[in-house]
Length: 616
Image 1 (cartoon, rainbow, N blue to C red):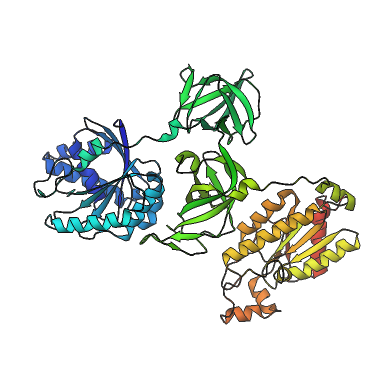
Image 2 (spheres, rainbow, N blue to C red):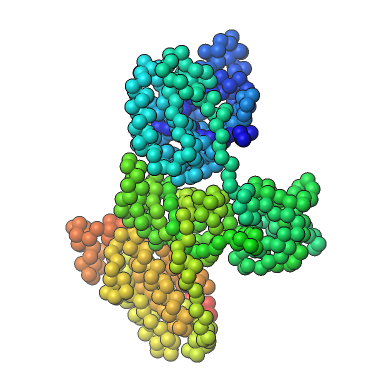
């Protein structure tokens, strides 16, 4: 059965004619729900130019003006209808740097209208947009070969473009692909059949949009799933769990389960703003109350009991990178889905998708507009569905922890087997008992600074002082660790992130043994030091900035590394070929230019003593 509302996007390369096409559709559909368009038509009457061509020109000029004002950085939505159907069209920018905006719109679309300039044929951006919409689950495509008037309505040009596009798209999984020759400027094959292309016997663009049967989502046929977006308790007699049903349906009296706790209860009531309901289905925003008082929080999942939603903390995912700064494997980002918001770590890509030929190519990072397959590690398990089964529960975005910018979007392909087959073993002796045996409070004293700043010297002086006072300690020095545990790592951003991740995990294990750990690593990036703090635990993490200016550290150059870096023999050397990001708010700042190592150690000791790390 035909859908009442069709949500589609228009996409294509720059200057393929998207604004002209949308302007023509809005003008020729005769029933427009768009205030900007109505204003443009009013202004045309104001100036006495009421002819149809002038109306259309003003409309297109208005759309083009939006682009000049930078509105194409976002997605412009237009609403209109014909007698047969209502439409929501997302006008997406064609520039490659705004692929992320097109992808955002495609994630909610049922169909894509992909424009191709008849003079240019199938371009790299055509392929990119086609792959992105297929990746995001759009199964229906109309290819509008535009500007046919400029190529004299040449049938051979249209046929060649059609063959090229079908050859490229045959493995993208589209259910329908319809290719239509059009002239958006002249109106050929937009609403009515073109008299200039009598050789074309297919539908006009509007005829296809009005009549295509887009398969409904199978979500309503699936088992019940509802992410909890809010817990409401207006009074002691009411505790409700609000959210939008992502799959299936629910009725009063149904037994449901909360994940990840796996606690069960029975639905007591289903409430909306207007009234109570006996049942609710996919897409409805409701508040559910339960017969039992079980612990449920924002981010939990309400699920059917017979067919539980899956949970995992390690996924194979397809990621579209959307930031100018490349992804650094091993660095932490914020994972945000319909269910969960938490810290995650992204592994080095398994491969990238070559948009030109869809082949898999090796890479150790994701750059702007790259599409790659990566493993994503979460800090804790969350409920999910594979993206192909449920767009809502299988999609996520990635957020930079420091800039708070969205840097990527991902689709869960499946959970990794080891995510569900590896369990934590319970151990009888606790970290607290091990610390009590040693009569001390374990902590990580994390020293960061430039090469030559004096980290190792200060670390050694501090350990001697702690050792003399019968504290159990160990130093993890950057150079020493690279001779063993991390000897396989280089100095790329990825390797540096992995270097810090490993040492943070080792530090945590040693602290579990009751030891005070002194870490002496350059650790140049704030993001990696934040990763270490998160792994170890903020309450037991003491960041110490061994603060030495670059010119002083370089003058010392006790290992001769700065000279080699200046001579180009050591790429990515911190301070020369790679930046050092000093801590913004370290627990301790130790300037070492005119301070002896023992005095620096005393300053750190004083902080530890004042903050109860040395209490016994």
